[in-house]
Image 1 (cartoon, rainbow, N blue to C red):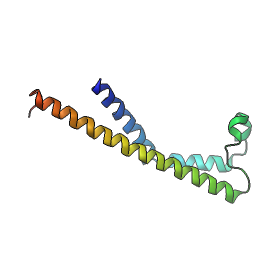
Image 2: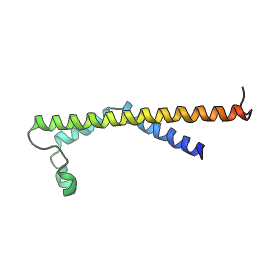
Image 3: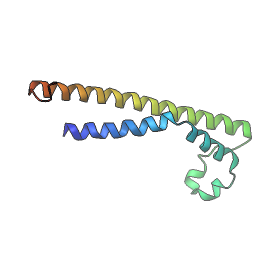
Image 4: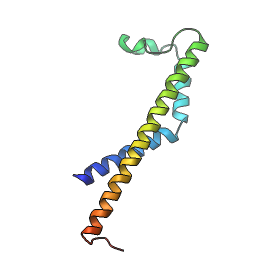
Amino acid sequence: MQLIIAGFFVCLDSFLSLLTIMPARIAMAVWRVLNARWVIRVLTPVYAHLLPSGPLPWRLVWTLFWTSLTYIMLAIWKILVGLSLRRLATWYIKLRRDRKQHMD
């Protein structure tokens, strides 16, 4: 069971590093939100009110705010996953040393 959890955290770590290392995706999404006026018609009315609206400076401020908040949250998750992986790796190495397996 511990190895399944470790595998989950490895996958989650690679996913989060992909999102935090490639900010070009975020820049492209911001560009699309700022330049596409048809997005509101495509989205359902429930989500349409979440898009930044109003004059361009306020749209830029809100888009920058939510992008920054998302980046901060992803960075925090990446740190937590890294700490969990380190703890699981330490546990696994200690377990194998106690059982005298994988001793180099």
